[in-house]
Image 1 (cartoon, chains in turn yellow, green):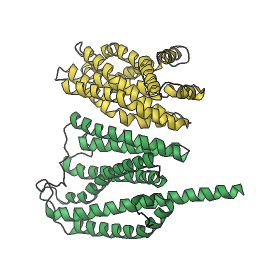
Image 2 (cartoon, helix red, strand yellow):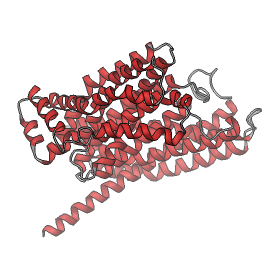
Image 3 (cartoon, chains in turn blue, green):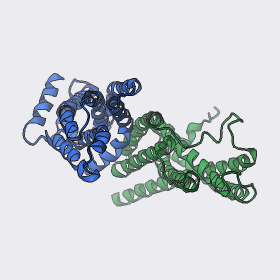
Length: 218
Length: 246
């Protein structure tokens, strides 16, 4: 499984893997926001947690169809499915690789973009914490969506339609946690709910993802 | 040896076609009659509410459609489970048939709610937990219908949508609690419940029950009709395939 993880990481980082595309998209979304809502620093500071969360979510979504598409096209997904590794483990590794290559850079970049949005310094910790805790759920849910649409010709748009409603609870609790943290309010409830969603999806969704891959490879 | 009769007999498409063909006209007529009776009773023979005026009467469309929008998803969940566990094609087709009807019910509930909200709350739309979770339910329906349409192989499509329906149900419930937490609402509490204190007044209650019964029957009739259409379409495809073979 570790070999598979390293292989996926290598493919993503090398040319043509699309590594960094999500990061560039995140940057562009955040840069476009002041153009669309105006440059007042107080307004930007108040909407910064929401913008960063929305940008991170969309950037994650952008790279989802790469999780299985390339492996499906060249047949390595069939080999993986017939390998002695359980398919549930394989999809978990795939989700972990997606998180490491797509979501983790966003988490690291978030404080710098928060700086551009005039977020008060006390908020950086909460932005990073909420993204760090919430993005694994985005990767795991997205892996399920990618597994559903793996065999389809024009799966990209369908993938977003299927995955975005599933992102709603994570987005609500993640953005709420960041907002409350920035404003110095009580953060315990959204923190626990976000952690609960993340760990529950990591524990349960790989079974659903593996099931739909078996159906798609049949 | 006597034949053991059970509900699963109707998983046989032929049996299902026989039974549904017999009862479909009756359900359709009963649903139509109840709808006309309930709406006329509700619109013309109940007094205006002392605060809301005549706008209260939209309840006879809003509550039944909202109820059926949720129950349609629940029915799809049960049908999906039956398909995944027992592989009865009629079950998968019924789930498929119910989805667009559920979409229509969700739209009716959202639109009637907006029409009522404009004079009463002074706004067409607020980000209230109930309204928002209905909008999310609508998105779930869209994804489900889109997935059915996108997958070419029928059995694969049935399997994928069934898993989607189950996962989606969990997330729909989760979203309901999330939006509750996220914003406090304008929407009133339950109009119908087993606790008589919470209920709307009897004079509005009885016509409401009639329209709810009407919506249930119309929903069942539409699902049966759509399922029958789909079974016929598959038979036709099978006949055409056989013809080409000869």
